[in-house]
Image 1: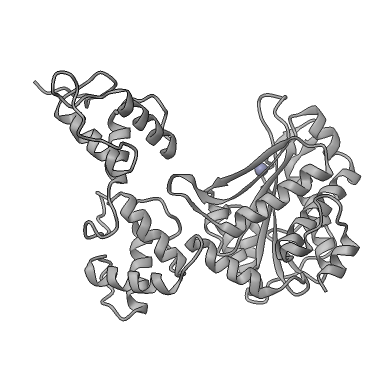
Image 2: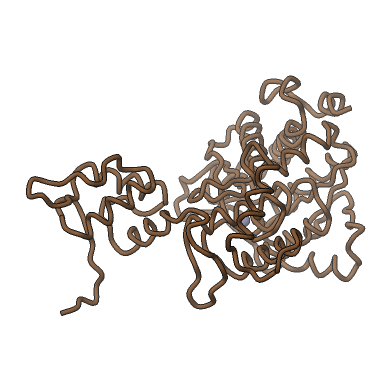
Length: 404
Ligand SMILES: [Zn+2]
């Protein structure tokens, strides 16, 4: 008789399936001795195995219960693939999944072939990036990652060394561009807009609030000689238009609300950085504070290094300058963060649903404080570490002098 429910294994179970689980856990480095047998001479799902499963679940963001059900088993199975173990390609309807796919994606991204994300799933974007890579190195662009393609990947990977691959290109760009902000291109993205008002509470409206903040940030950036663009028009001190975009295209992007369109706008503007401004809203009025988000996929340990640094700086400055609660920085794979080709940070500047946060945000002086904190964070990103003054003490005139 066959059961419609796939089996689950947990502490105390034994048998051939447990051997398989133990070997796989050893394969991902979580179990030292896969071949230990229990008293009855059978492979046992013992305490050590239970701990290893829980560690694995924690690493991969699966509910930590020590039970190997279908999801945990599939994820464990995918984790055992190393790049080179098998030939990889795009298989519509039955996409290949595994850590080998993630490794391939990481390498493609590190070399500037845009497969959009590192998620361990060989989808249509990975296929396009792989073909693009193959064309560039003079291979047949067949989208099949076999021995020839692997050899080219290995050879090129050796010429690019040190640091997390994705971060490397961004770090080099930051170092090369020098400390001065003048001449840099920044895209400020006031979240929401149009019909989509975002969070609304305590007589405040997220769309209006982030427009006001964007205008304050933009005014200060322009004063520092930064070429600043907004992803949509706001009533502020004049907004520029990226030269690469004709008027039609610009209008198109500016009225499009999707994060994807906003990312395309930043890419077309060849921005050095993107700052996306939001405020939070939540059922529970006690939820409060500021949080910053950067591109990153926890599951595969893949991050934008510069994005993370900028998020840390933004968070640090805002927490030091205001009394907003520190909700820390977090990696996310949101479209605006992953589709932008430059470091991008989204910051949630307090909760409109929280009485304290909304009262502060209602004050123009407080919004100036936030704008100043954001700009100091951006400037710090470009300063060599030895010029880095203690958090919260730098002000704009000193910054302008440092950047000269
Ligand atoms: Zn929002």
